[in-house]
Image (cartoon, rainbow, N blue to C red; front, side, top):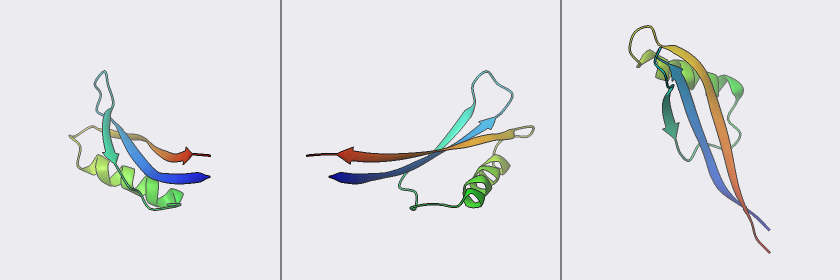
Length: 67
């Protein structure tokens, strides 16, 4: 049996530093559209320091498989 555990989103923002800034969101809605995910990335980049650039969004889906 498959038990869905949830979805997570991680927005990655390039601030010109060695590491990317990562902003995480838990319990994302089922099947978000590509446009909505990318818009979230752009919105979060707007809150970042000047000269920051939106890099990508990672959507992770977790499920548990049990007998």
